[in-house]
Image 1 (cartoon, rainbow, N blue to C red):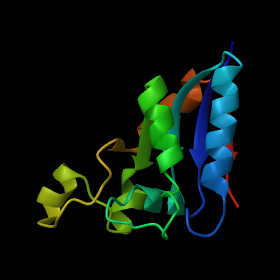
Image 2 (image 1 turned 90 degrees about the horizontal axis):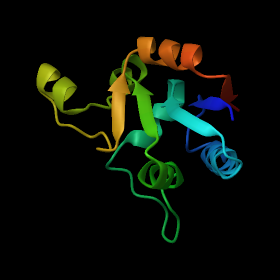
Image 3 (image 1 turned 90 degrees about the vertical axis):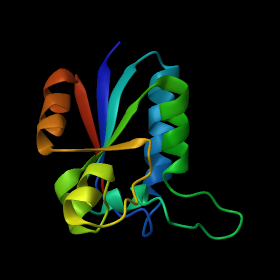
Amino acid sequence: MLTYTLMIHSSPHETEIFITAADFAKQLLESGHKLDRIFLYKDAVQAAIDTQIPQQGQQRPIDSLLTLKENHAINIQACIANSTRRGLLNYSEANRYEKHTNLIPEVELVGLGEMTEACINSDRVITFAA
């Protein structure tokens, strides 16, 4: 059994990268491996904006990852620097900048130290980027 961390770098609106990452994660878990966390970096943080409305009949790109979180207690984390730069704020950052929160509650804003920790603690780090 190996421990994996998945990193997603690409915008959720330009590619099918979130579907690919979720399918990969499901396969890992079904094969008996451990998934430590999913880290959203660069434009991928846009998937964690709570106010997005998908096209009729479609899911938000992050919904399949949220299902994995719910079923397998997997952490989904977004880079705080990339998030705030794009206007994505949790409660703490919204108060700090006197703005409104718009982060999906199941996603945690974290610094690059968390990503470094994930790389150290994982046997494999898989990056999804377009």
